[in-house]
Image 1 (cartoon, rainbow, N blue to C red):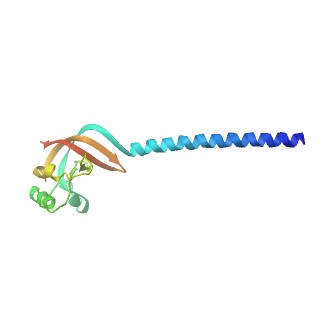
Image 2: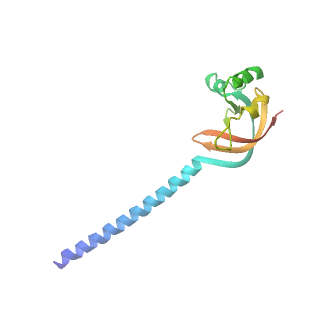
Image 3: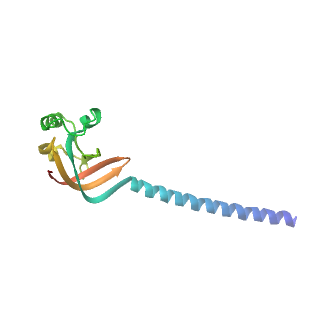
Length: 141
């Protein structure tokens, strides 16, 4: 009888330890997932990127490396298409508003449509996409 009680107590202690260990592991996993979620939508300090201001649809559907012409990019933007910044390496940055509710950014880029620019602002990365809150834009050489 004593042996049976001893085994029952030992089993209970082992079960409690296992539950505690599992709980700690779960908390660490949740903390790691939260850290990855923050990293998944990371922002960096001000950066300067150089690229072409191009119509978002053309860069994807026509696989353009640079705009066909400034007139074409302006016409697309005036028709409602978003302008993006595409680097020579092919990376696309979506200009976004730093405000909520967000506003379109074509007004800041329309004068540079179809041209090479140097843009400074806060860069965000999420799920493979890149975005920039524009602080300054100027024509590049």
